[in-house]
Length: 86
Image (cartoon, rainbow, N blue to C red; front, side):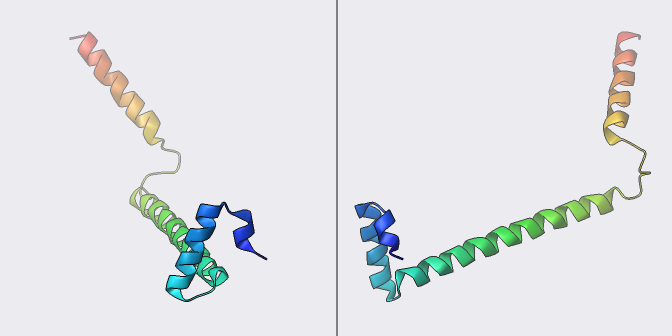
């Protein structure tokens, strides 16, 4: 497969220069770049999962039937009633 055939002339030339500077075949350079991108993506997913676990742990003391959104709305309504009825 010739990767350069699917690229415009400028990109093909840049890739060839990179290949020459690194003294490696273009396919090898691209394979390593794809591997690095995949590893970055995988570590991001793990980080997101860790954040979710931390948040669940932080609020684990709350009963499962308690909605923080509903609690906040109720507090705001009470504040509004106090402000409107001095």
